[in-house]
Image 1 (cartoon, rainbow, N blue to C red):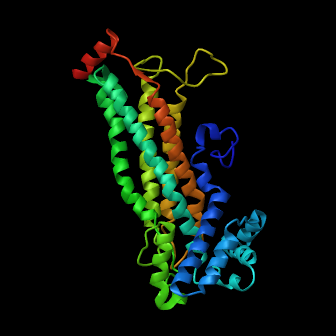
Image 2 (image 1 turned 90 degrees about the vertical axis):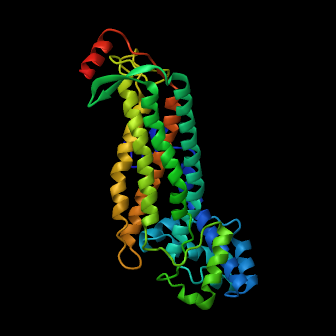
Image 3 (image 1 turned 135 degrees about the vertical axis):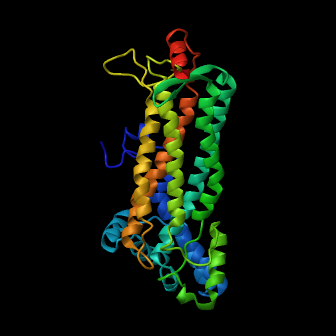
Length: 366
């Protein structure tokens, strides 16, 4: 076991995701935070809050900035957030008179939350593309095997024969609906977080709105009419969406694992996991992993809903909880979609057998 199976040297082969991990690396986070500070300086230079030449000095000095990560760790342990130490390093890198114009009017939460927004945009684009790929693969499976008659099961008992398309659509259609919801979910998190000490941008006076508009435009984020430092419904909605996706994939994985049992044989898998003791086995590893990841995200969702409780204008406790939970939920969702696409490509649906299955069908109709 590991404290972080998503990054573990070998557990990550099952639970991690190589495409998603870079968005939650220290390099990506620091780069996004520096991008915020550079864009802020330029926005303020354009609005006359700071001298324009100071803004360009800041941008030039930070173009190749590389932080002292050990110092960031020590600073975070001391301050509870990385930004005070990061800003100290940025000002040192800028040097001379322009250093005083780094981070003007901003607060730590502006930097951390906007960094997350910047990284969530490409991360959600990957999830969207994978959702599309899984739904297309399920449609192809239905086109090929949808007319095959299989046994429906209600309450784990054989019910009546149904076309395989009945089962496949119960896997695909929720994913189609989740993908349709993603635009709204993305709009709730791809926003600029910029409010200053208590969300009022009081240090920028009547130039606050202009700076915010310029900053949002430069970063490619949506401006909002006031900072959402303690309004976390957008983040919680994303967490709910992630759990819905993995939950629907978990339902599919559970169905496939049951149908692929040796005694059932309704589905044959062309690939699977081996056993150290029983070399004849082909274990439905991908299907089982979908169930695991669904249950994992379902348990974490409660924690993300706890993080909605931000006291007053900012909460260190609720905010930190988000940092611990959300990256894991996103990585779990990415891994589930990766496994799901591979799993659908391994499925061959087998027709109903005669004899016992027909008797079970008759019992189900009686």
